[in-house]
Length: 440
Ligand code: HEM
Image (cartoon, rainbow, N blue to C red; front, side):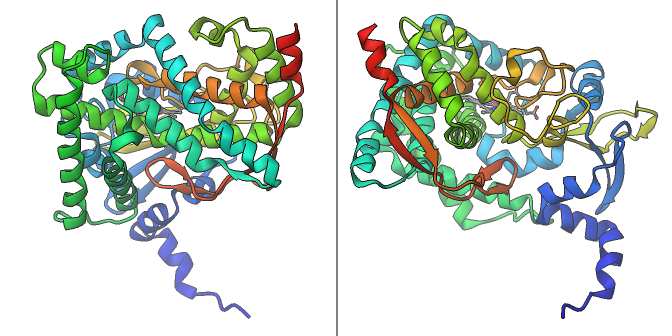
């Protein structure tokens, strides 16, 4: 028989206990403290700081939009990711330089830029087909996680560096993944280790590799974030920090969202069929036709709603505020639980259910769906992530029928963002509908 620890409850109510509980399991912590009525934020002391946990779209609107001047990104979280995102990287910036980087990046996402990326992603997806065909012959399932992750890494490489990161820079990828994991794990420790040889080694590899790639890339006249920043005359260290920030922000988040979207679609045969029919109606694959592929886009949004990779948005108040009648003192940590906001029963019918066409209709509150954040610092790569997911889902549904080998979704490991922790095994079968497309 299990004996109950008499101190457990006491420790839990204690601010240090609360801090440890959050660090140990942030996902569970948000769940545990969710109030029945989400109208007011939940105030708690964690360690020596005052925290407010928010579960309501109205709080998101207040903090990210209406009273945004009262909130900065959380310095606690920014400190944990500084090595990864660069001390001058866009994520860390809070001045007019941020606007400059955002504008440069937005210009790269012109229709022509996006068309080029669509063709790249299309080519990357097609490289998985021989693996899938072999799995059909052998009647085996394919673990899609490494394949989807590679597509995302390669697409990020094209956008950021105009460089195929898979071809040469395995050391860059490994060092990046290592450092990303360490930053995530550091969220779980109270103390910040000032000197970690392993961390420094990873960082040094990332810098050496990025510098080496940059030298080659700048000789070629092809668009990339690197080229655009260099053309603007930005300094080398500043550019390197942006490259790191974009890699950090765009790699894991997109990969995990794609893995969940793939799982959900593989688990819903009729959705696959409808996506395949939608593709059949599209004359060509380009950015314009993607924009018209409303069902696949809705299905991807639904995956982002149920499994947001940025599962919380951390803010810090820079002045006193009042949120739904609750006083928020200056210097408080204010954490928005994106996962709960996006499953709020007042704003979504059957909130835990995957309804692929849910987003074909308007949602009830503009801040009830915030996988990319909101307000002026909303994710600058959202269009790219959507483009990638749309092409990958369309291509796989067009060519194959899929069946998820396990009924449960991949397990989640909640670090700074939510990672998937288990394989995604899928059985494939050739889709008949394709033959009809070429006939008609
Ligand atoms: C599904 C994929 C993605 C998700 C869920 C996601 C989510 C987010 C969120 C929630 C924020 C705002 C964070 C905050 O306000 O605290 C953000 C910011 C950002 N994202 Fe994304 N992101 C994704 C893909 C990408 C991609 C593909 C890129 C670029 C290649 C990217 C680059 C950035 C950058 C640079 C920022 C900082 C913007 C700023 O502070 O001005 N993201 N992202």
